[in-house]
Amino acid sequence: MTIQRLSSDQSGFLQNPGVVSAQLVWAENAPEAKMTITRVTMQPGSTQARHAHEKAEQIWLIEQGMATLLLENDETAPLQQGDIIRTPAGDVHGISNAGSEIFVYLAITTPPQDFRDAYDGAR
Image (cartoon, rainbow, N blue to C red; front, side, top):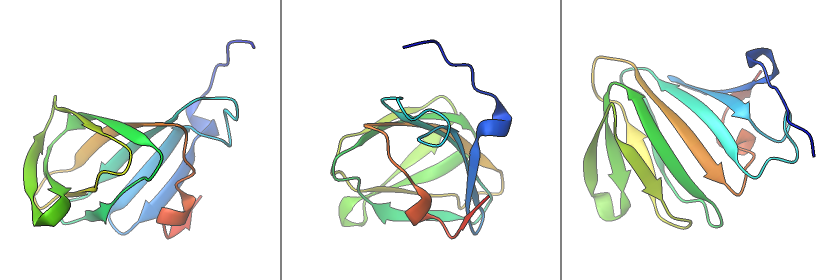
């Protein structure tokens, strides 16, 4: 296996209302990678509904802003820049950006996942 250099023009972009996910490392540009790396930008008022990844865990690195982590049983927890969140496979999670600022996080998912089915638009 050789080292691979990726550039931003090889990223895929997935969109839902108020949410843009830049697929930095994914099956389209790194088919042998053991993870998916996504930078998610959420506009104020946007939400990623509660969901679970049956076979994949995620680690989120919160880069900018504040939001609310949506957990199982209608529980919530605050999120802010600098937080690191680990979600084991099968755990319910989501995010709501009810604030007035953009919220940005980096998501590392392993094993890799194709998130196209979770988004309305791909470009």
